[in-house]
Amino acid sequence: MSLPFVPGVPFLHIDMDPDYDRKTGEIGSRPLGGVLYDCVKAKPSWLSAIEIVPLPPLVVLEAAWRELEARSELTVFLSWAWIGTWLKLLPPTVEPRLVRATSDGRDVGLAVVCDHRVKRRLVRARGCFMNCTGDPDLDEITIEFNGFLAERGFEVAVARQGIEQIATQGGWDEIEVSACLATNPLNLFVPEGLRRETRRQRAAHHVDLEVLRAAGGDFVDGLERGMRQKLKRSIRDFESVGPLRLEAAASLEEALAFLEDLKVLHVKAWLSRGKTGSFANLFLNRFHDALIRSHFDQGLVQMLRLSAGDRRVGFLYNLVHRGVVYQYQSGFDLDASRGSGWRPGLVSHVRAIELNRDAGLARYDFLAGDQRYKKELGNAGDSMVWITLQRPRIKFAVERFVRNRVQAWRARRSTDPGPDGDSATR
Image (cartoon, rainbow, N blue to C red; front, side, top):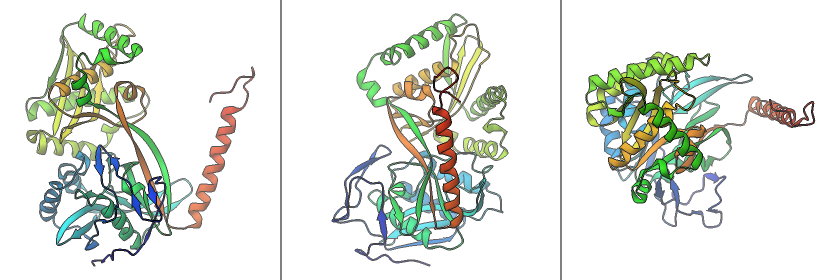
């Protein structure tokens, strides 16, 4: 069923947007994910129709998705390479639906939604998930920069009217959008009658490689003094074993071999912390095997190996899309311990940054995470949020009440005087 939208009829309120003018209905231009989107102005882009339908055959959807990609600003996570690989591997128990927005007879917005029953400590709820399934095992692949695939100039209209259309559907208690930029229109508009919960927020640091090229000189020399010293000491230690070499996999077979070696180091590191790591997940392994096999020859996959002489120091699994390098996964030789100054992860990232800077790429993106090295190596950043839009339900009010009480209790404990009068740290 196609739902028409009438210009001038307000059906959403806008929250958490300091640039919103409630008298004129305008929002100033704002940067979203490195792209300056023209948000709703005096002449907004209105949609002809928007509908939620069963997923069409993948060959049909691929043609529509790729055609819209050519008219969109997007990250690798909304490319058909990612979305198509994901959809092809979903089990038959998952029944995705397509959200499709059109204007003047062409697609201007697309997203996939899946229904799943949510189980938290206090709550059982029916969830509607955007570009995810809601099943933790199937979502371990971890989408980021989530949202609608939208034509340039339609980003706000698609997000605004698309989320409203999802909200009109029955069968759910909450809509979940994982890992979208805080500046994404999905985080700025809330359908009337729903409540937004920000379940998580993480920094998303990256290196602007264009800034590095303009500055010239050595990347390490431009870092803060402490980081610069650690890196130079670690590089000297590695070079005492043998020359440092960063190699990119030159063939599909070599890329798959690099991935297997990366897995060994990655799993070993996580087991040392009492955990299994992402590669214990069967769906994640199938997904990345298929992604690499299908798209390595297209330049989407960058598999890197750093060696010191004959010793493997680390591996990086990057995705490259429209000039951006997304640092997706890694594995490092943590047994390389000739001294405490050995830092295989830092040195691997630095060499990868230099490689991609010299190759003319635009950005080296560490993705979401508050790890210290991301902040220290990065020269720019965004914020990623995991948001939930909830219908008014007593169970959600109870959940919020208990959560707030627990957080207040933990805050009091963290500031209680310790036995010597100092603040206790727990």
